[in-house]
Length: 502
Image 1: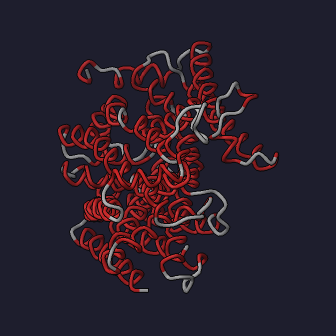
Image 2: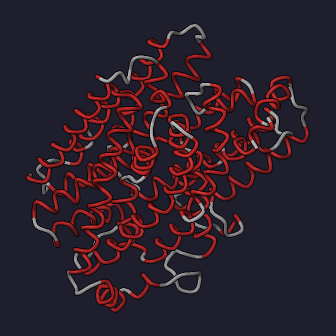
Image 3: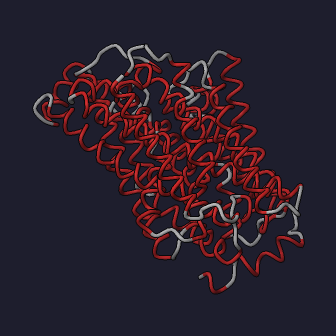
């Protein structure tokens, strides 16, 4: 229970940080609450964005994936992360420039100005549907670890309430500025603790090389790649995982909200390009912690493998240091919940609600966003009550669903011929097919995880996500070419393709 006490203390400190942001005026207006008055410097932006993505997925989920699948997990994550910063900058440079000029505060804003209110209403719904599995992964990962650290004294069901309670508190109090402050402090903290745990785990067997030699001797399959040898990492599987994660990251709420919150163009560029590099280092370490965990703990399967991060800390560090290492992973999970929940609450308030009630006051929008934060947390607790999909796979499913919105995003900024009909049709078809494969897997006995993420023979050895993604892109292009741009699309060209943006 000593570890739980330390984690609770860190959570209470987070609430105080958020309250400090509130006292300094982070909630004086809708602009302050939702985008921190567009006043965040690049140091805060870098660690806030880093913390909002490096989550229970990156700590518990990725170490569990390394434990189960070996270096294939590291390879697919590297393929995803290396181009990520450059892709983000390419796609979201106009998000920053136009967001500053137009006062955007939600994901739906650019889609609404480019395609009209229909697309602006669809985006918050799609984002919420895609975000739920990702949020459930965070809540589930934290509850599993609390149960493991307390040795069953705190059951899994009780642990589900831990992070949502604190997250709701400091998001309701501090808004985007409070979230950024908390994310920055926690981002630095968990990055340091990953380094500490990595070196401690490797030192247990005399260093990185000797540790990997021991794992290879007992589990050579963890070092195999490709269809000929890998347990699961055929090349279509690698490409499917990497594409879902890379493109899904670009389309999640966090890049939009941080672009709107940046104080300067330099801060935005540094934030985006630094993110991928730091992620490669941190995630590589958590993956190898999981692989090395095979020398420390045996017999973990499925969801149970997500405990390896905490179990490795308990076996290689003093009690107080192990508590801090696991607390770092908790901090990572909570900061991600902050980013995703806040982005969804902002979308619902500024897109859906404002379309229904254009005269809504700023205070009314802030109040609704706070209610949405609490509501989303309740839904996630209910859905995580019976865990049956590991944290890593839950996160990738979420990325895959969200990735289909990359086509209307690209069309908004780079293709003058894109139409609202193409954007709507491509998005709905892509999300609909992902959900169809999800239900098909659940009802047909294949399993939702395998249907969406594993290559299927009847899909030409592609996974469900890639098929959905390809079809969504084809529909977007075909329908856009078959329909004429309306008044909204035509009018928007002067803004989205203004020469000054080049």
